[in-house]
Amino acid sequence: MDRRDIILLIIGVWVAIASLVRMMRSRRDFLLAKVKEQFDAHRRREAELTNAEKANRRA
Image (cartoon, rainbow, N blue to C red; front, side, top):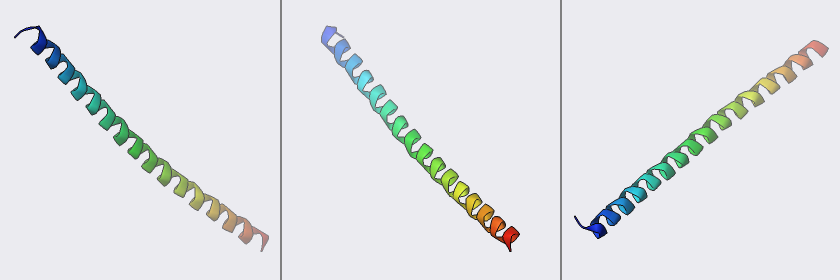
């Protein structure tokens, strides 16, 4: 292997690692958005329940 082959190998490994990191970041962002969506839905349901409980106490 001459110098050119080694440089191309290093560039190839670098590109592979960079694309893997990018894929993992997008997956992480997707999962975080999903969890946040579920959490927000849970908070909305909780707020609706407390509003209903307040209405029952008034009646």
